[in-house]
Image (cartoon, rainbow, N blue to C red; front, side, top):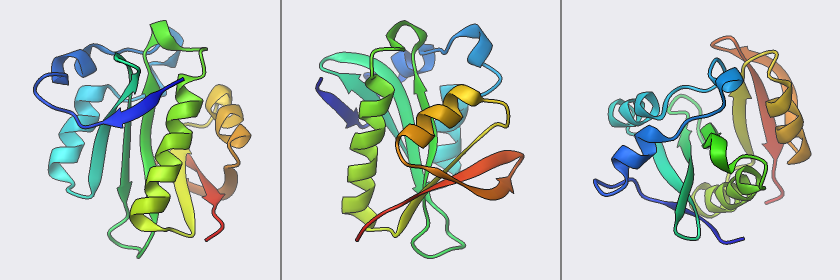
Length: 148
């Protein structure tokens, strides 16, 4: 499976806006248009398109916390409903983790998700993320400790 994180351009922007999650997941994931708008306001956010080969399958955004040195976050991850269950999300996360190690060399990578999102909890735990016990903007914060 050849997963790549690519820049968002005028050529793929509308297609990224059209990506959607399953109906029961909509309360857990912000629309991509919102995330891309955030990235234009917060210059420390980097939105990426997730491709499996030539197919656009999802969206990921990462960034840094400007208030804490070397604190790196995976801010958003979504895989389009028609591509879920094929391992694209897991592969995209593994690619993102390696990319963040190369760019920032952080001691840990953080993410958060809504309480009650058991699928996200199990998914992120399978990648090694652990609950920090913190709540940020109503979401449960998790951390992946990295070996530097």
